Image 1 (cartoon, one colour):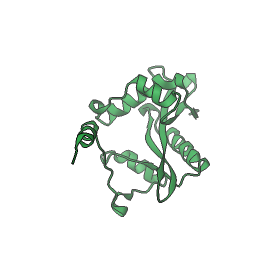
Image 2 (cartoon, helix red, strand yellow):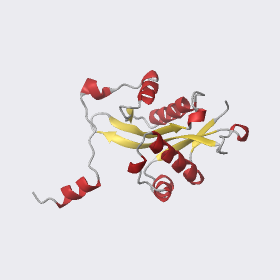
Image 3 (cartoon, one colour):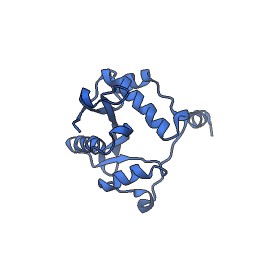
Image 4 (cartoon, one colour):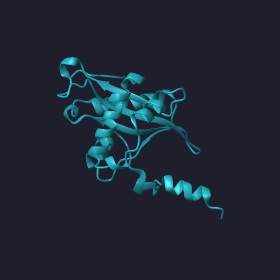
Length: 171
């Protein structure tokens, strides 16, 4: 199958948001998705972007049954390790189900990896839900290490209420 990987533009916002929603549905976590289309457009394509996105496109003759030519995306941002230096964090990589198995996901991941190398990053990092065995296998098959057990790192999060509680705590 023919496809192209390219940097996303503001005009891609609607397609990217559609696929983010599809991913949330797939992960059975739609109730946790609070990002709106407007948030994505502002944060990815505004004056000071918080993230960068790649999209995968197929030619018109290969479009999806719903008529979409944009069939995958990878959203990533830069971070910093005080021990290792620059790094890229891959927030999401998604390919529409009917377009899986054609190398689109692998090429999206490879393009993010190239960006990491071009930016002289020490790491490309990502998180995968434990239940998502297919994705965990995909990343492992492409060289990613699961450092959870090896290094005993735990991924922690302050949610909105936790942030508010912590900020207002005077002790």
